[in-house]
Length: 232
Image 1 (cartoon, rainbow, N blue to C red):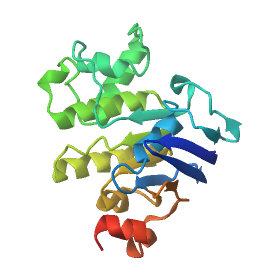
Image 2 (cartoon, rainbow, N blue to C red):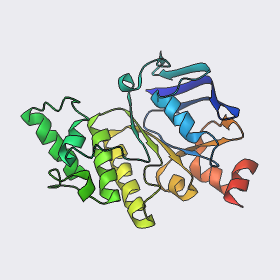
Image 3 (tube, rainbow, N blue to C red):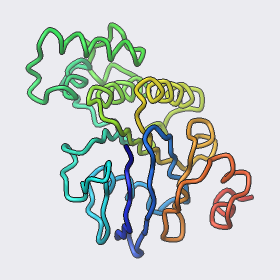
């Protein structure tokens, strides 16, 4: 299984961003580059929230370019956790199973298991406002997991967290990706995050999303656009 960006062109502010590459199943890929370069726009396009001006998005060679986000094999976690403040933690997570919140006994068990997996066992009765920022992101991550999609997209969801908590969340994501064999696409401004968790990196700069290359190699010998961004 793979996801392919086939001659994609999409509008981003005053310029056009192009992308033409394939990501294989099970890869952990960072989208790295300067602010405003189009990383989040590209991720939103892959997830279906933006339609490219030209080109196709293929999943397992099937064209999903015009497929609505809810129908795509993708779970997306934003920088803002997007929890519903009037729903309990348990119900926020349960939305990943059934948006009507009509849950079977098995569904409830699955929700409790998800809470345990993200380190929030016994916290399901609380409201989002009773949790810290890091805990709220764990809830949002648990909800993504329950969608059981083969591709997990992260749009800098841990950017506002301190270094220790961010590392903890990246460890959790890494563990989940390894256990589920999912594919990870992660937008980041931080090269250390890319090198910590991803195998491959897509450099997004100067109007182009370059083909993925090994993260360690890219950072060891960065092209001019990346070197200028990193200040090296």
